[in-house]
Amino acid sequence: MLLLTFYLIAITAEAMTAALAAGKRDMDWVGVCVIACITALGGGSVRDVLLGHYPLTWVAHPEYLWMTAGAAIFTALTARLMRHLHKLFLALDALGLVTFTVIGCQIGLEMELPITIVLLSGMITGCAGGVLRDIMCNDIPLLFRKEMYASVSMVTGGLYLIAIDQSFSELTSMLVPMGVGLTFRFLALRFNWQMPRFVYRDDWH
Amino acid sequence: MLLLTFYLIAITAEAMTAALAAGKRDMDWVGVCVIACITALGGGSVRDVLLGHYPLTWVAHPEYLWMTAGAAIFTALTARLMRHLHKLFLALDALGLVTFTVIGCQIGLEMELPITIVLLSGMITGCAGGVLRDIMCNDIPLLFRKEMYASVSMVTGGLYLIAIDQSFSELTSMLVPMGVGLTFRFLALRFNWQMPRFVYRDDWH
Amino acid sequence: MLLLTFYLIAITAEAMTAALAAGKRDMDWVGVCVIACITALGGGSVRDVLLGHYPLTWVAHPEYLWMTAGAAIFTALTARLMRHLHKLFLALDALGLVTFTVIGCQIGLEMELPITIVLLSGMITGCAGGVLRDIMCNDIPLLFRKEMYASVSMVTGGLYLIAIDQSFSELTSMLVPMGVGLTFRFLALRFNWQMPRFVYRDDWH
Image (cartoon, rainbow over all chains, first blue to last red; front, top):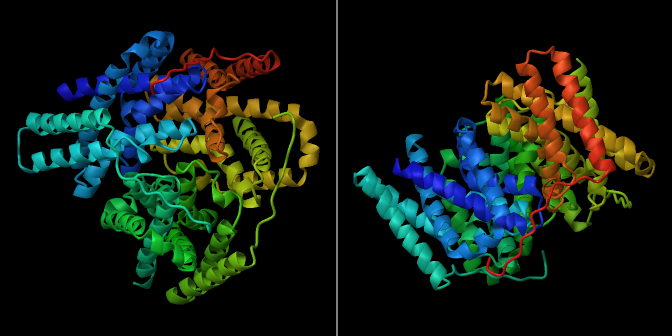
């Protein structure tokens, strides 16, 4: 399956970027592996726990845990090289975002949930892993502050649901929204697009 | 239903105060909506996940998500006005606290849980949303440091369970504890009541 | 049951050390009790939610909540004395780690999960409570930075699974790995053993 291939590439890439984030906080190797697994598999886990969709992906497929932990340790060992692959990581991370989103929407559709929840299932799958990583690293989640990450996920998921509704072929329904989402993400990175911010100060709270 | 009306007012109010908190951390509009939904609906979600009570409220009623996100965006757009409504927000927030608590206790009773867990179900519903908001905003949860928030929830839930046990009418059982809880909360705010703190310092941990 | 005795000692000890951590952040008594319950019972709760293993321990046994909250308040009241018991706490904390690990593995075995997940179930039970405590206290989780905590849990769980596989008696299968784990933990504390760290800096992320 094409989507499974994308999924495996995506969790590997997420694990590698998470390992670099852990290295910036001087974590030990256990921390690096845990952060990598949580970032790569946490989005799907949050979705499954919220929707009561058991067993979780990594419980049914423990090999994904070994893959992400292995990718994280490999990254820690070769970190000097990794820094030259910055753009490749950004591309793989974007591929992960749109892949996770489509997979999340598919699970929502299988569970016959309301359409809002199907879209949200996609967005949670795409974005929650990064939020968990930022909480574990004691940052305000990046998702809430920049990068149009959630917007890319929403556009991808929305187009996918429209395509499914229009009975396009499964392949078209997946690949076109993913392509649009990737393009959107690359443009956002290239031109530093940001969502408008809400800046508020007061003296009473 | 009176309780449903209170609930809808409460989640709207929680969403609006959460939006202001997000604005103080310069979040973008996505962040504002996410924080608002988590604050307004997160307490009930934590309860449902811990008790295995599926589907979650917002999965069964996606319209609540639109309501909270809409209230958050409205708040961001009219923030200059909102700052004059500080006292109204505090009142609605207190209404939310006692309403959530009673709803949480009702769900615990329906599930025929032990009485300790019924009370805790009420307290989690009332308080956990604010804790999640503070974790997302990278603060030490306010709940743990001031405001007698949890105590108000405990008193409200405890009185509600006593009233149910004494077979008072459903309306009396709800409204009297909620009234007592609201009064307690307003007095705590007015006179700056605080729980005693435990301050501890050492050199070895 | 010997394991139940160890478990009760362990959750009491975890509650007491958590109360001291809460005191260092000037939390009020509600915060102290909440942090204590989350630290002592949170590891098992995270495991049960991730595995869909309902009802959670403290829902089935609300008396554990009273025990941990009581231990936390007792600790707050007698904090001056507690500081002289530093080494006793470290020993009880280590006992908790290996006990939680074995209990988590047992639950994984009962659910007939893959062996990787059984081991992980033990490690989550042993370690996640402390991670939740650190997130609530707004720290980067200690687990990820020092103390070989996760490694002790992994060794204990791994030996337990080997012993079960070799059909040793239930008592031997439990006590020998727990003894090895305790020894490992004490040596790590005594000689300040640490996992190698992954330190990474860059200018692009």
